[in-house]
Image 1 (cartoon, rainbow, N blue to C red):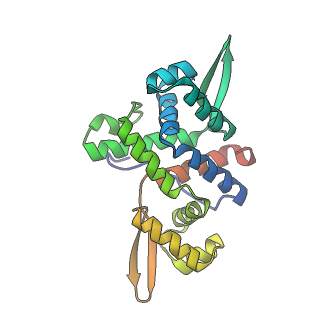
Image 2 (cartoon, helix red, strand yellow):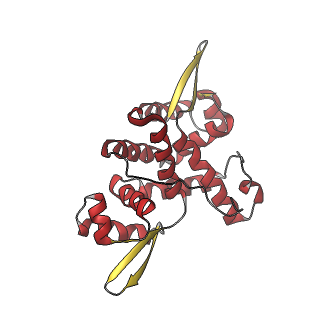
Image 3 (cartoon, rainbow, N blue to C red):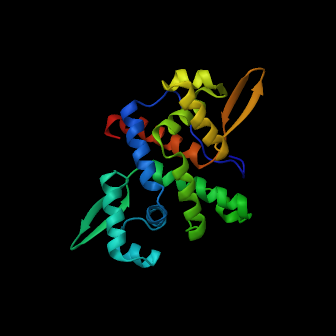
Length: 222
């Protein structure tokens, strides 16, 4: 991996519809700034109690508990009991691996080279994490994720090819592609009367790749 490359994964076939629907819900949960910061803390610190997380994030324990309960219900975190305390930790690869991409993106943007090192685990600035959560929210939609997945699978494609591949009307695909392009998730080029789209590297590509790796590992238990 070159210094400024971002992690990605090979997509060999589309996910089953029910799996992508679950994944989109999970990504939707991640796209909240406080939840993303909780997951980031767990990624760095490992299994932690509610009080430790609340102290680290300078947030009320009740608020942290509410977010953790929602993420546990979504399968993003798991719990273990140690005496009277409950400890939380990340339950799956795809939320954890997102931070690999976020740290490398931050390192590239700020030229802070320590974030580009393999295995770097360091808390990012809160304003950057908030920005990242808001960015994830832009593609946390099952139809948008299907389109991005298709582009990872098939490579550069026109609207008609994508529409056939994701089983959506061309008008709806065009609308999603316009938003994805405006939000800098895809690029496009015109060839005659056709416009071809290509996925751009970033946290969206990493998220979908990590979802595929998790499905390959656990199948329908996703």
